Length: 311
Image 1: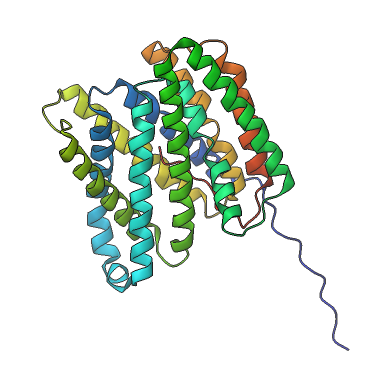
Image 2 (image 1 turned 180 degrees about the vertical axis):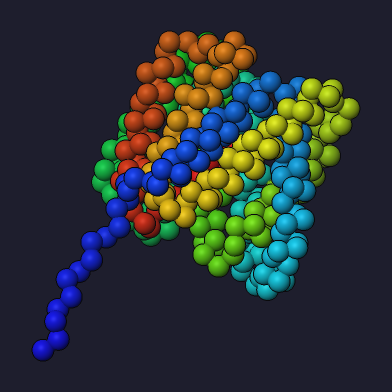
């Protein structure tokens, strides 16, 4: 009689990453945390900032993608192209809402609200027929309480800040859509070709919007161009490139949890560099948001797309 093989335990969703990846993770989170403060400090229209960071990112990736992945790009089928370009459109909508929010509200409030992306990804997964654990619903309730507290505090400061909060929240929804669509195409398309298509289509759409709305795309000071290049090199390329490398050995749940440190990191940079000290009422709201999102991320199963930030 053949021996019965004991079932193998499921891989842990919270396994400790290798030491090398812990270091890379710290660098990646630090790079992404510079995104919001840099945007807030850049003297250029919000949509123009969104266009240039994606345009520069496309230019940086294109030579390697065309040399190394030319064959794969040619073999992409209609479904893969459609989903990749659709993800680019959702990324453009994310940047088109989140970046303007930084002109209306504080870096701390904006990054706290855009960090709710995993919650919206879980809701999108539920709407697509996937199971969402009960624990995740508790996390969403905690995060919603944090949203209500935060928007209430900002409304007491100014209606302008409340509009910025709402834009950041909408930006988180579009970011979740971007991740969810990307999760459907990434199993068959390599990172570099996918990134080229996403950044390229995102930049093209934002360029059209900028031209139609009359956004100033040039004539900036040297300091502004330096900040745009720093934004591209840091958050757009270094941060996300390292996240993709780490994802090979680190569970998405651990990665998503680590990314939550972006919010306090961005708030600290904004306070030290821009003098944006958030009111005390924002702090408990931000804590509620981080706890709620953390509960959702921790309860995610493999059916819920991993949430990688797009800032």
